[in-house]
Image: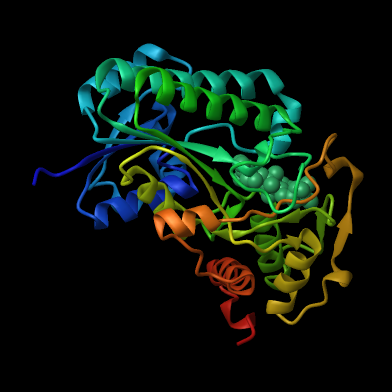
Amino acid sequence: MAQKKALISGITGQDGSYLLEFLLAKGYEVHGIVRRVALEDPEHRLSRIVAFQDKVHLHPASLESYASIHQVAVKVRPDECYHLAAQSFVSYSFDDEFSTLNTNINGTHFMLSAIKNTNPDCRVYFAGSSEMFGKVEEIPQTERTRFHPRSTYGISKVAGFDLTRNYREAYGLHASSGILFNHESPRRGFEFVTRKISSGVAQIVAGRQKGLRLGNLDAQRDWGHAREYVEAMWMMLQQPEPDDYVIATGETHTVLEFVSEAFGCVGLDYRDYVTTDPVLFRPAEVSILLGDPAKAKAILGWQPRTTFKDLVREMVEADCVALGVGNAVRS
Ligand code: G4F
């Protein structure tokens, strides 16, 4: 059988890097879309995929340019396309609503259109988000729960979700959306709360930082491991019919629980270090996310494996090891 070709947008991010590894292990020829600046600054911007640089084919393109995406689609002619690229930091979407909407909505539209126009048999994955549920209308959230986004990021993801469904219904594209709940790992960006906490703990242990300033500690999130969530993306594209799936653990925890667990890993009491700062609260918060992954389990055979405690520990340990204080982590 001919080697399958996959195209990933957002390949340099947390999810893109895990997906790249996963697809290479499955024998795929993997292509990635990257911004031109990333190719000019590989040490910094390609750090998550540096180990695979000689195995992956990178193509410069911009989510803001249909022509550039179209060109890559023509050149690669992928069998599967994973559209992960986005402005994905919710907090930033309050600072620049316009660019978040432009990049995320147009980027998704350009990708769907380029695939439909050049390679309509290609299967497409769209990275939807639990942020689409926003001010949740039921707990837990399922594929049937109504969306009520609370940020332009969430709104952009609802638009991407609707575009994906419309390309499926109008043009027969095999296009699926994953409604992924928060997923973390040692590769998470430092701006997201889990990595801010795990790296903060390591900095404190290493004596480089005295305390940690956070926003809303009462928010609840359904946190899983990113490595497992990319497997679900692939599973969706192996189904005979395209569809939408909630990918979640089915457990929710407060930010405070994450904080307490993370400091506990190195034998510290968070109350001695953590302060809250109103500046870090969001104008509109998503208070609770809790997903029901029953459909993914029944149809894809997917289920989460990493527990909340193990996830926190893995992240704290990785950050402590990176700073040379791995021995502070309690066994
Ligand atoms: O880690 P966060 O920034 O992630 P958030 O907003 O839930 O979004 C992430 O998950 C979504 C899936 O549901 C993705 F679509 C999205 O791209 C991203 O990956 O914040 C989590 C919670 C929020 O309630 C926030 O208010 O943590 C709270 N928080 C408290 N203090 C903080 C902080 N968040 C950040 N980033 N920094 C803080 O200091």
